[in-house]
Length: 107
Length: 125
Image 1 (tube, each protein chain N blue to C red):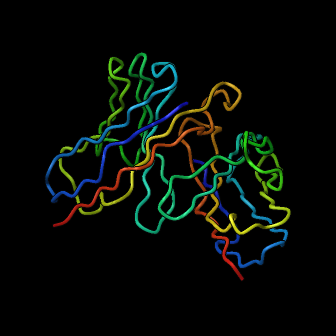
Image 2: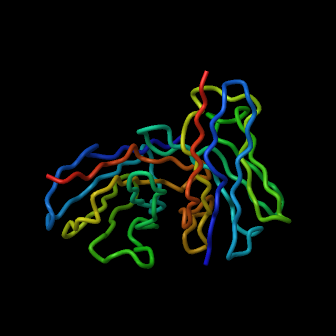
């Protein structure tokens, strides 16, 4: 199975900061990668699919890049609503695998 | 509006059986794969398995094969996840999710475009 590794596990940042989360796949997944945001007690929400396509309704401060085995999610200017946990997910195979999550905390 | 509405909180004892549900609305239920995702307390997301309601084609993660059963009822637009004998380690939040439409898909699978609200299952000894 394809392993997904996110870094960092926790990120402390301030409102207005530019933050980047990295996700690495154990083998090539082309651009079949999604990013989700989850707030406590809620279901995750899709932010990015196909590595760089922004889901409808998601603010443009979110962006995704990458292909093959290395991917990034960037928030260009962190807003109070963005403090949450972020997960990457590969869908190159029918057996999805997720990264372990990155918690973005207030500094 | 697409919605996946899951059944409510469950509190059970180990060894008991359980079936939780996920009702889809606002779209053609039969034509989209529905998957189940587990989230144990304070942990990440795990894919359990998936079903295509039109023909009940079902696939399981090896980690969950034989531990749970996924099914769907086209007539009621409802998917199910069931256990025959719960363990305390089954304590978790369970989400049903919908595979996105073709624009969200590889040749094998898709990103998740809609999530249910989750069903919290607590199993005590």
